[in-house]
Image (cartoon, rainbow over all chains, first blue to last red; front, side, top):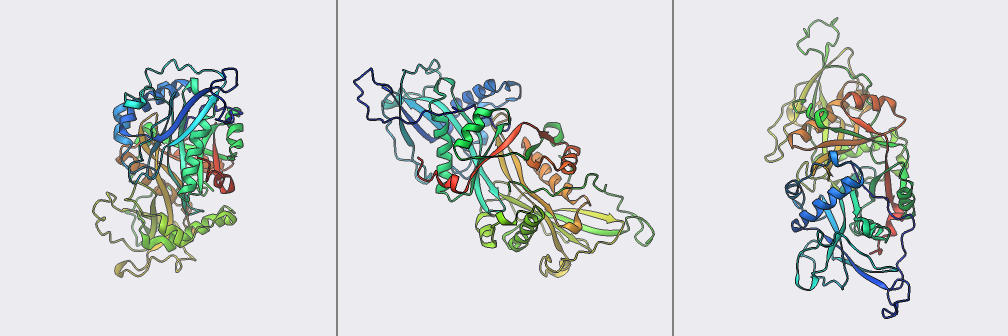
Length: 240
Length: 240
């Protein structure tokens, strides 16, 4: 479908103080996770592909999901970040990240956040979503992604960002990571002087709508999406 | 607003045969217009700006239309056509167009259509929308535009086009020009192997919905647009 935002937490976990005494196992939020948002690269395609498939399962839309790794490789990463289709990946680790400096010109330094949880988090798919051995960062797993690209408002005569997909793997939901990914897109839009961030939501997904409204978004009630696709689009092959 | 499609003709004028005897003034469709769709260039910004303002008036949204010529110049035409924000202009003339070959690499040759009308068409704004003297083409007026840009479907792992605005000046409406502009975008999408063309419509605009459905589009009833803008977006400046 056009966009696939899983129902995010209606009341996302606020970031607790991160300076709680780590040695006191009776303290709430004593289980620390390290999270990072970074630009995806072509090397991440296998993980992005798996995340897209999980999203299709979540939305019961596997029958219209035909994306292959090869399709993703050939259609993403053809432009500098933010100028066209752009993917932020959410990574999780049990130890602090070593952040290499961002590639020159990308203008996006990875965003690190420490998240403390009441209960330990078990990721049953950790093995499958490991980022690949990388010396000090060999317990890093990919936990979610957001795919977005520039859109344009003629009335503002300004670009914005359109968020096509936002997805967090099941065991990482309701911990503020969805908000973190969307906030990263919004912050980047402000940084670039853009006028809007837009996405779509299913009208029956009241939890998601409440969450988005709490984030400051307005839901536009009157607009409907029109889509020309498949054979109906193909019919225009020789239209002009 | 997000998109501004004026109510197109519910039953657009079919292209009549263009080989009617022109000398017989009693024949229906004896008034011939020459139309052309071409890529806009930076030199067209003044006309695009005027069209956007007319669109804002048409939608009673002048209070949120802040676009200036300078804004348009600095945000459009920064990428090759079709890779980012792209504008097709609709031009009308009383004499055949002289089409220079398209600039190398754009991959888009102007599209010419002859339109025959029952009644002569008077354009009260012709002077204001003249394309500027250009030798043989000095009666050419700008009559409308469509602004679109690539979007992306993760399920298809393919780009598509999103049509942000489609506008035809009042005296040229209900003559098939809106359909012509939208068809040109659809044809270009097919040519590039893209998966979808999408746009939005107001749910109460039943004429437009009927027209789009006749063009093969489906209206997606359940999706709603979420928009983060203004102060609510600005609040994310230092969010990450």
